[in-house]
Length: 369
Image (cartoon, rainbow, N blue to C red; front, side, top):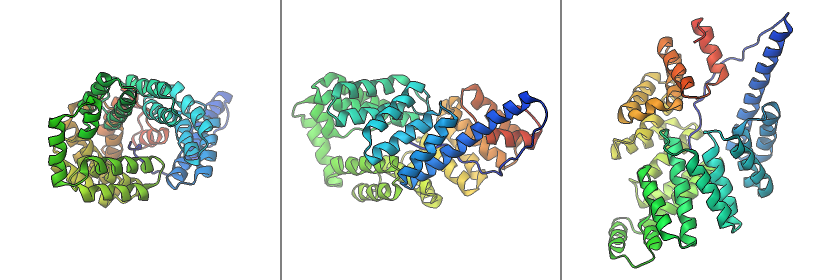
């Protein structure tokens, strides 16, 4: 799943004197900024696989802001990577209980995987279902992707429990949210020798030998490495998948996201450009192109691709993340009226704008909203 857009700026230093209520407000704001700073440090350490340092910084963020769902979720990831499963379960549970739209799906998915690894299929099924029901019809591409993951994992549980009709319903839901399912997996769910599925698998295997199983294997393993912040390992597996099928849009998109996470935006742009060539209706790829160009400092192209996202997927108008990302690009172009329009729309949709970004925008425009 992608991260939020970065926003670089100078540290603001304010000297406040006088009224105690003002000092109290300043103290709260400072605490929030400190929590955000600790969270960002933790995220950076996690990307570098420095797990102890990440855990320490996320702990600081939680002390300063006990409702930081992202800190609980990511500290849980770090604990899981260290093999401290009990602590990982505790943090995922706290993230889930905070019920934030940004972490509820991945936290349910990760806790469900732990239960599945323990052989507790009923608890895993409960978590996958909770994640699915948390967002019945998400529009943001990252949430839609996790919706696919949750349905796929739940289908695997239903297969093990021999509840084939329910597993097939999940397969249909995966396709509804833009994903694809291995024909061999579908054949297993149907629990019979399906000649049509055999022909489909054989036809694909003739073009890309082993593609039906190996591409999905490498893609899944690459995604798991990406989730742990092991971007080079993720890219290596995506490369293996693309040697089998050079034109798999999902693998190309995932590799592009991994390149962007490493800061290699030219390679990210190349991958996402190929995705839109293969699938011109893939709005997520256009959004990812916008993010990569924004991070390169090419804000004209960033805005072009953000607008292209909206053209391809009009539902993006209801996505707070989309408005936030485009607002940042408008800010750096000094198109402040358009920036404010997107910021206000994002806030209206319930999206939390980064407080430093909001502060800089107010300072630059002399406006409050």
